[in-house]
Image (cartoon, rainbow, N blue to C red; front, side, top):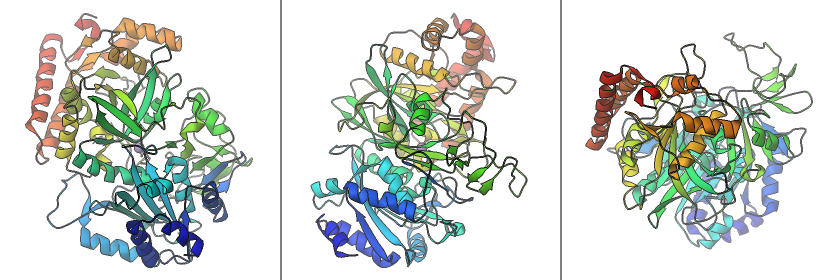
Length: 613
Ligand code: SPV
Ligand code: MN
């Protein structure tokens, strides 16, 4: 470390950070170290390094770059993501773990001398707005300028915050190395590991580049945060934060948890509404109310089917000058990014994560290679979006009026429903969330999996404790936020989706009307659903569309056999988990009894009109 870098480190006057950095310099043995302060000069240095090292390449539009991850490194690696647990420590079966000593020995073995010939970047960030009681400081060590650059776009700078919190021990630590590279992608994929050490508040990530595995402040920090939140009585959630307008320019704020690729980001960005965040929120109670902040200041979003019609705001931001990192898209001959579902037809050739690409190119097993990867992404600052909410940097957060849970469900839940209560919502909607798998994680797609609060991949406490935390969170509130479920993926008998992409705009407006007590609803066995006339009016006003009674009936029919089967699945899952509170089973039993009563009265499929609508 040269004197200039050492001075920057010493200026922090923090022995814990000093010790952390020194120990990984010794272990990873980089040729040099660069310490990033919050100065634009340091930030520019990292940005240039990413280009110099060819981790990113410039695209035609000023500020745009492209990054490629290796063929086998295109999503989060759940299998090799593990908690380091001491003998006797047990977080339950949903939590992948390895003995702490074995794991540490393994990861330290991989990290030894791993940065020889490379530069180490040491960066400081703030998870959440600056100078906020919500926020957590973080230090990232990485040998990837792409990772450090992405984090600059996605997170607030933390060097000055560390200085302000003089001598603090309270920070998250992340150590990443892309490992040996071949053709600029991580070579030793068989040694890809993401190990989480809750005790030390530290996450290790090696032999990988995909941001979901490497950008420590994203899902790796969410795991540490859930653990911290559970011990301190707040919530760290896989949630967007957005404002919904009441038609008079007044926003009310909502948080929404949906598994990856289930419309979370596109909801957060909806036209006519305002966005605070699309992925991770911290929620705290104050004065009997719930407040939330976005942990991030940018978006690492999926770039598939993003077009100028359905996603005008995003499309505009991605087509304008300014800092954007595209990853795993196709780069055409004009040096422009192309992604599946963009307005224009695919180019005749280009370069993607598989190398030179032409239409019809296949993988070894014969499947056609799409121009961009299904999990291709863009990394952009929220302030590049026209509808960014002015409260993004508010250290006090925004007051949360409702929580929304969404999954990919082809045959069971209605498109939109409000829970009867906090408890019923947390149990039958949040804790019972299921979703069909997508390309955001490695493995087979389309399989229905249990994903409570859409947080199953990130849990760092036993599931029983996490659910209890959620249930208890409403204690002491003047009024708990309303809970809603949405399902954008319901299909008809012909297999076609029953809703259009834009329908979610209507659902959000109805949700807003409900929390304002401005609209009545219809009570069913599982919750409150919208009345036909209200939706009809909203479809007309917002989308200029006629909403037919047939569409309403198909979408909002209560599907009793499927709902009963779901309760059975969820009950079995929880029966086989340790220490689940009886309240969960009581609530599921009550819902089952209501469904059976409706079944006796109305049959298997109950349309809203049968209920007097
Ligand atoms: C998700 O998959 O939920 C994401 C992207 O938001 S990742 O960073 O891979 O987690
Ligand atoms: Mn996510």
